[in-house]
Amino acid sequence: MKKYPLLIIALLVSIVAVSGCVSNQNQTNQTSYSQNGVTFNYPSSWQVANTTSPNAVVAVADPKTVDNQSSPTTLVVIQKSNATGDLQTVYSENYANFFNNTGNQRVSEGNITVGGAQAIENVYTANESGVQKEMRAVWLTRNSQIYVILCSALQSDFNNEQSNFDMIINSFKVQ
Image (cartoon, rainbow, N blue to C red):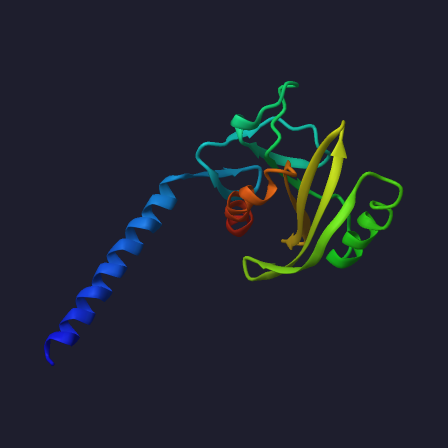
């Protein structure tokens, strides 16, 4: 009878030790970005990328997804909006005509929590120069500024990239 408590304790210690190893492994597969007033983690196999997106603060991309036009198909762009007003109003105004008469189609929309604060998430598909992509736009307010974290991948790769997108979104902070 006395052997069972020791067995249970030994099992729990083993589980904790193994989960610690898994956690450390995930941390070594991350790189931190800390410039331009923002900080976040991203996959260590990705690189900081050049971007021409309006209001872009930074972009990171998976270099293994560079297409024949030298552009990555899996990337995240962080934008700082020049818009003023509350988050819901700015968000609604942005998407008021976005899905009308375009190749863009909404997949889902909802409220999420990022860093303990409310954010708005919009997932949609877009046809960019004949290439079908899926986008995940997370809108949030930090220090009275509106930021958009725009995650993008080929539609066929989008679901497989969610853990990478989550890493960036969940670690995002404004300095």
